[in-house]
Image 1 (cartoon, helix red, strand yellow):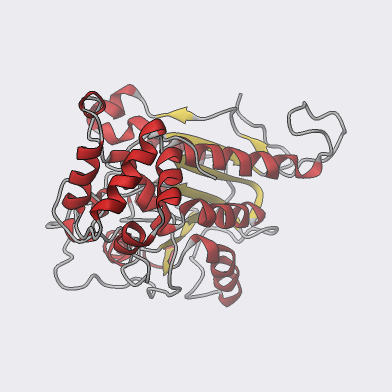
Image 2 (cartoon, rainbow, N blue to C red):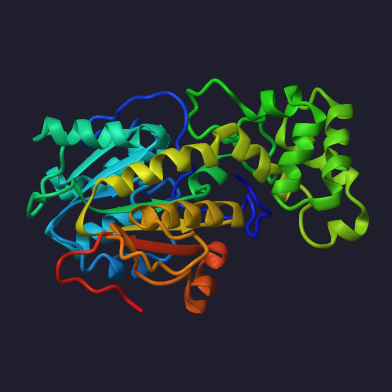
Length: 367
């Protein structure tokens, strides 16, 4: 479920696809010693204005922020809409602690939980059933469905890239790690040193390395054991012809491919996104920000399957069967960040925003 990338591992978003151990952070968890907001970099979320605008029409209730990260989108949404509460999940405990401090001013309108995409349905259902203390306070409890909206901001965050010890970036010397949750068992060290050459080549090809995929994979296997980020970057650089090195850092797509494998990203999104769609109330919307073509293609496929769920026409044909469609596009295709935003935050350049909604009796989608 992967395709060539249009972004880079150094691009960011609020969180990677959650995968790993289950667990929770209690509501309004206080940050641990040293995680002080004035000393730690806070991730700058992309397309905030567009996200907030697209949620204008949703009914009062609870928004699921499936990649709450350090709380940038969440704070903007809660500031804009006093009738909304927010259930935020993420697999990165460090990000959740920063988010807890950032969002504490919203009180019981916010509940944060440590979870992965694959458990999204269970997390939402259990919080809904538990009620007060586990379900955010909002202006209204929806009568059908659970969620007034859902947001997925995919990719890797600045917090993770800028922490050398996390091992996500080739710019810093660090042990190979790349786990979104440091408690997960599988690290990039294991992936790099234990995966066979053919599978490595397949991953690199899917991330856009093309004809160089096999060459890079064989160089990595010959150089084993590889233990650090800079060592891996040097091996990749040495395997790439000089002409290819002039197009950017030669390790970019390799690091991206390994990160995707470590965190099982497509598989987690394929489980979590449909679970969120199934829990949308009438008038609710689901927004996804993707950063490379593999993410975007999978998001589009999941949305299209969900939209055509009540239709028996071929997927490549216009619906003419008269089936009652449960979801519809808010706008066709995807939207990018504005030129002004990209000029301020270059990491927004690869972001693409997708949106669907469950129609309400009187609602109309955008053109």
